[in-house]
Image 1 (tube, one colour):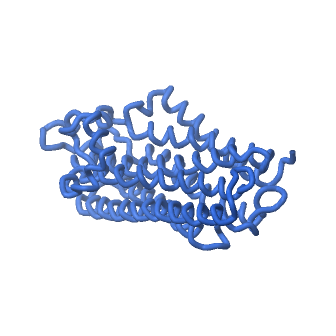
Image 2 (image 1 turned 180 degrees about the vertical axis):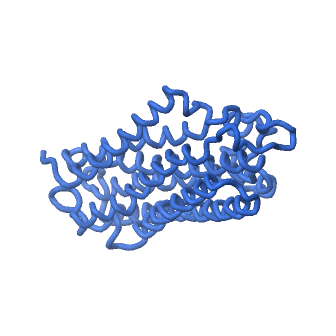
Length: 322
């Protein structure tokens, strides 16, 4: 067992995510973050990424002696990307609800309860009838697309690992090749959905900026939009690399030349961490930092149609500093 470059790179980002996780624990302990808020999704992302990087360290040490660790690394990495994408939508929804009183991403007072909402998503209702959600509940459509896309990425990763060790999995050369092609198709489709939804999110950010300028909101709100725009750049980098990694042979997990005695080549480790792991970490860090640009002071609260200084009944708008 050797502590090589794969383990070292995973450890670096594992430490960074552990620091982020600890920071968020402090924010929860001091009640700056609320459990029933957008930050809980981001907290889940940080926890998943800590586990993912731990698996990366284990794989870097054990290498191919334990392929289950590599599968766990791929699955947790996909779950981390999944949770970060969802979190970005909820953060933007919160910004619009706090500053404009409404958002096409989600309602202040959802008419549909939590369980019914979950049932609609898991039955893909927003996919079959998206026009029912485009006016004031776009996040339902996003969730309904992300869940199967996430499943495709995970399935593709599992098929890929099995095909890369055909003898242990009792596969013929043809069966292994067929599984690799199927895995490539699954991962490409899933990554394409993630990239598309990221681009849609950027369009919503631009629309939020337009409304912010038109409403002549404070400089802090312009900074918040700038933070969202920067996050969009890093998420697009992550999404583009994910698609390219699925379709370009040189970047692919399926390419034997990307592997060596220490797991992955130095070039592949660098690309994976700079274009996949780092953009996710920076985006998550900026979402955390957005708290300081979006939490309201008493003199910044805008009046809404109900005559009060807060929208009615929304979990994330009850406290000024949420």
